[in-house]
Image 1 (cartoon, rainbow, N blue to C red):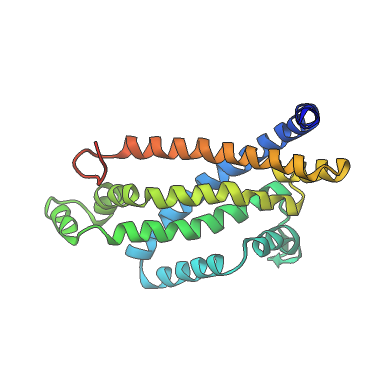
Image 2: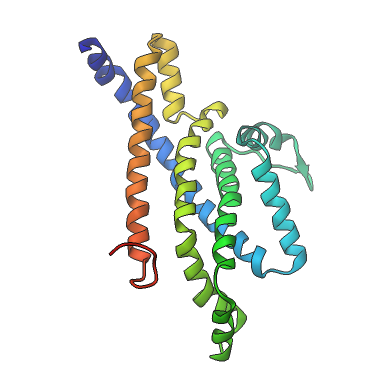
Length: 230
């Protein structure tokens, strides 16, 4: 036990601390972009014109129906071989991961937003129109805020998933928590100790994110309109 703690403090923690900041730099923008994509796509799927709805439905079906690993391989390994108007897009491992996670997460989050929007009674739409609000004002000021509150637990759950599957970034050479842990395990052959500590780091990240998401839910809650105990 003493040797485990000495190895953890002397070798594992310093290595994983560097990977931790890389993971955070990956998770935060991917989560924010995922929410933005989810809200935009979910709203367009409910109120957009039919051609746009079909296009976004195809996007959602594609990113929900293919493995995330395959998507990451495409953005990092395959995309540089795709030429559009004479231009080849080459993404760094970090940006390939952010793009892959954001688009995949956004596809799932659009389903939560769409469900939240469809749960709003149409009487509120008619009431807003009777007050002189334009269709855009009705959606952005009346419907979407309510729908987002209802969808927030699902969107928050997707962010928790993103934290955990961010470990897949290591397969395209990102030195995140998992990447640093894998390298240390290979060099020391102490896989058990290394990945126990890696798991503790991810558990801590998920715990902090869960606390923050509950805080946001509490701040956005409207007394008397939420199904929660006071």
